[in-house]
Length: 378
Ligand SMILES: *Cc1c(COP(=O)(O)O)cnc(C)c1O
Image (tube, rainbow, N blue to C red; front, top):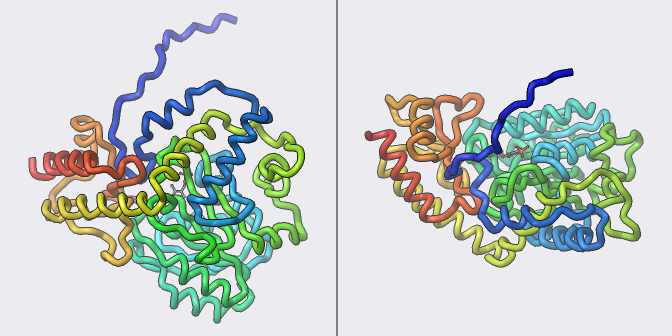
């Protein structure tokens, strides 16, 4: 065998300003934490860190749920973890679809053998609680309600408290996607009575991608324990994952936890606790207000009504006569600035400007407005 040795140097990423739908800018402090020495995933020092991470996540989710931990995998794995454990073949699930991620929830229900009932709203609108109520009246056997709290594909936020209350009233569990909301706008798992929720590390927590914080309440756990059929995914089966994450008695090997990324998440959550979650919400709001003023001064219009607008994800219509790909290409090549394109029915029509986590700061707002002025007016 004589395979040529490739002469490839180390990878040096360019320095970008990340103002898209995620990942957001990662603070140096978090990158430094991730560069600390790798230790074993059953090392007592590591398991102590895991316990701290769980406590910090309870604060971020505003919950006392014991079962709160980061799944090893991106937000999509957190999503699947919720669906594969809670949806048994034949279960009827009401799924709210007002953007890309609601559509993925629907797909998850089907693949679990569940019977989805879609409640659709226009992209850019929040989920309409009245439609959800009607869907439960028409489907009294529905066992679960699934909805996206912050639809990253459109920038619309739905009323988590109202939707979870409807599910409760009809004896159903709720699954909430809070990938984009956690750390950016209030996510109140206990106050809203959410039964299961998942998030991601790379949006308003400003960590690197690849970890998905999840939380499950007692009622959700009861449903998992009462399953008649085993969870079809070995990796995501909570009964097995818990042998490692539960912290009761001896930890057993399930899979090798991503050690260094977990140092990063721990640091991100320490930073959130230091700032105070209410202050983090207020910071996202204040930077959104500043960006909004500048965007409107440039003559651009928002996609979502002010009442449902996510401060951390600003969708705006691309100005008349501006070429989408060309303008975003210039932002990247001339300004090292990444913003998001439209998805699905909104592709080519909108831009999605993220103010997530560490990216939600005045310097980024100013820089983004300067760059947008150059590519739309220049
Ligand atoms: C980003 C996102 C996801 C998926 O997260 P990944 O980390 O990309 O797998 C799911 N739901 C919403 C609302 C998101 O914004």
